Image (cartoon, rainbow, N blue to C red):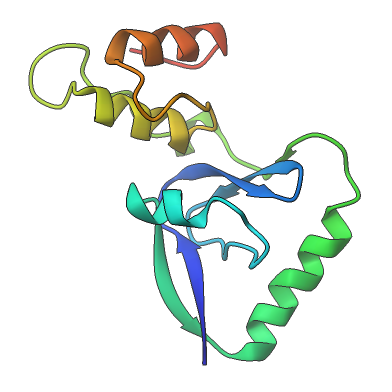
Length: 129
């Protein structure tokens, strides 16, 4: 058995080489992903045990899709996106907003405050309410 990572978040950005890929809940993270530790630390992925052949299959699909330029966006609908956190009161912490931004594919600094994250989301055209 090999340890791999599966997406727990609805959507998150995974960095593979110089490319960003959007993966959705249940997807296996390619072994070449460079930001797995961050995704694990913020609770967006979970460890799973896979057979070596399963890991090889995920990696071979990655090699084929790696020829595309720009982010690869898997099929999803607005219904699949998580709801934005509250802007005030319980659940409105900067960490909640950073996790939300990460889950929908907007990169922000690990120490960005709530207002900075909301501004980045708005600039990216993502929902904040």
